[in-house]
Amino acid sequence: MNSIIIYIALSLLMLTLVAGLIRFIKGPSIVDRVVAFDSMTVTSLVVIGVIALLSNRAIYFDVAVVYGFLSFLGVIVVAKYIQGGL
Image (tube, rainbow, N blue to C red; front, side, top):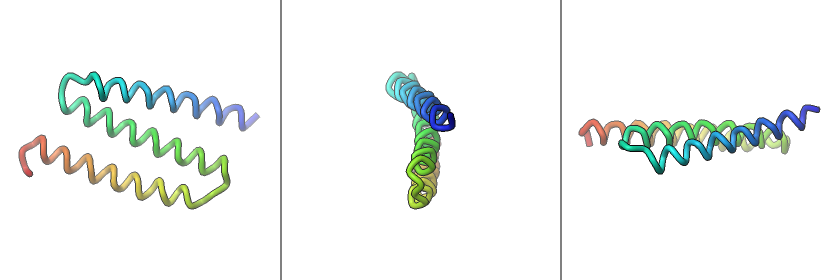
């Protein structure tokens, strides 16, 4: 029963990733694209966490933390670029 719920959650997360990708491609402004990219990275962090739970490997959580940190830094750099600080 739990695995069915996890697979349903994974399929909904993949649907969210596709919706974010559509917004990233279609976004009329650069800010829309940055927000879409950030939401896709957060969703992919959750996907990595779910995969870590399914495979019983704790190393994936470390990968998710590093990926989240790099994503945060990337969004900050892009925001500074948009603002004109770089």
